[in-house]
Image 1 (cartoon, one colour):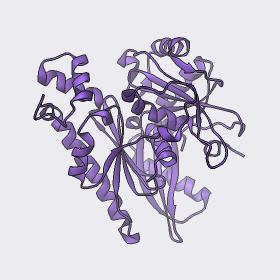
Image 2 (image 1 turned 90 degrees about the vertical axis):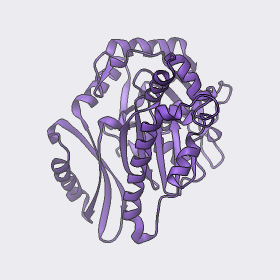
Image 3 (image 1 turned 90 degrees about the horizontal axis):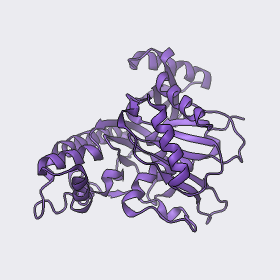
Image 4 (image 1 turned 120 degrees about the vertical axis):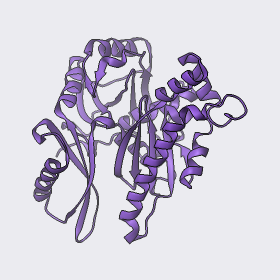
Length: 362
């Protein structure tokens, strides 16, 4: 699903770009052929941090700061090379309206009209100010289930303007969770099982139900940086010290070393409630065909915190583990990102692995 798609040759390469709250990641993959050919990383990198106020409510408001960060990334922080100007870029899920809809089986033209009417009914923004798109989740002889996604035009247009000002050719923009779901579907051995995806951003946490495609998703406030700030305040230490403690001690050893669990408990409790809500929604919808949510996968900066997956597994009463797609991706002679950085490159890998059939118009 892309909110802004352009046609391109099936054989033209593209690279993935993930623009975060204060930094951006890029990655280009060469997609091999045949069963045993792993995607090979051609180039990747992570930018220096820029002012968090460069993006306001999803809109890029300081193109200069992002431009300087991107130039610095390509000039100084790139492993390998990027051989194309065509780019598939993420936009934050938190700025997208997402709604699952069940409709009677209908033609494609009727479906387009029905989606427009549903958007006007449920989305609190005029449809003329939105880019709309949808994915078909499943259908039977009577009904069709879709996932409707809409993003304000001013957000999409700010990304387009920035990318084009950098001499890039955007071929698609899509929510971050779509990229995470794509790399999970490609690289995880248990991707056929109904799965909760939990992606820790800097200030938000994206949560999605994945069942061969995204079923429903949501965003809650409070990401990795939020947890670090709460730890720093609780222990009276700097942000940098809190970052080290979060990644080294986490909540696994809180009772024995530094008890940070109480500092971030409000975020963890909210996260569990939101995940349980999505699990109930999925299980209720799928009860008639005997499906239910069976596992959860974590990714992003927060997934590195020791003890987190064990805590979530206990609270959700299901297996919870981090997403690790790197055994399915070949870095060749390029150095791998360090262990803490790897989870932060998962989303951009999901953009880089985009199949041309998802964006190509015949």
